[in-house]
Figure (cartoon, rainbow, N blue to C red):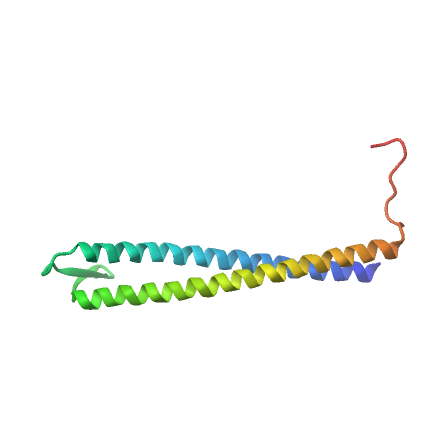
Length: 130
């Protein structure tokens, strides 16, 4: 019985690690979504600009003049990178969820085998109490 308890403890710890990994990955994905929305907003602003209007880029506390083509290309590159990262994280999320399901099934199997091994030697309900 002690072996089953140790195994359940190890499986439970693995499951908890997977949950934390999933939570961290989802948080990262949410941050990327926010960055994507921000960059899409910048891209929309570029479309509203008239020819000859000046674009400035904030670098630290300083605004520097930036070429429109460079600015558009930088934002486009960021969006492509963010999209790829989101797809990568979505794959990782699905993979982690599948691992969690397998781990959960394994925990249930160990619990079931432990109960069968105990042969009902566990706590018995007291008659007359609900």
